[in-house]
Length: 89
View (cartoon, rainbow, N blue to C red):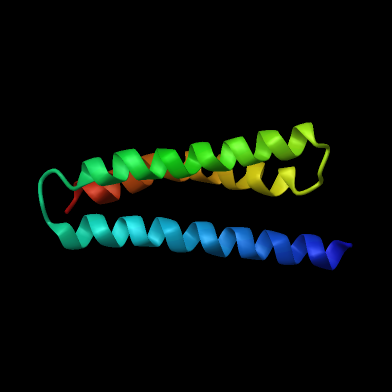
């Protein structure tokens, strides 16, 4: 059971990291002065999606809800540094 939970955690973290990386890559490579808006729309949308998944899994009393709650909290903590990073380009 613990190995499947760790596998689920790893897959969820990697997929979220790839999506965040794709958002950052798109914003940085676009070079437009309006490209931070892309980040300001899609990053919170991803965070809200993870929050919804966490709430649904929590209501269903599934242990994997903790994974998505951790991802959501991590995304909230990284939001301000990433906004600062985006504003530099």
